[in-house]
Length: 163
Image (tube, rainbow, N blue to C red; front, side, top):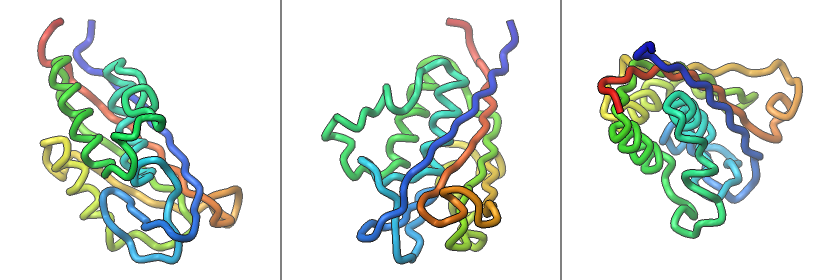
């Protein structure tokens, strides 16, 4: 059996007034934020699902249910650190992560290095192991009309020891 595992994560959240916009752990000044039980960091949620998928840990809905008051308003970076702990228990190390944010606005280019650094820090890896991209959808769909944001992530894990 190979020692490498790949996982894909996807998440989506609605944009609403009266919420902060947190992406990759960065508080981005904007008139709306993402709706969710936690801080609704759609980018980190996609990364977590990619990691949990690669390690066969289920998904973040299973690990951190939105019915649990412990997770109300919690930083998704704290949840990501918990995912890292679970990966370590199963003998996995993160090789790299590639993530893309789908949003019409705001422009996030200046924040991308900090997003990658935040994700890497939560996982105990180097920022060079995390790539964060962003794209618009040319005005199409819910991300294009500005009613929501989505993110995809792919993660590669290496199994360091056998169970």
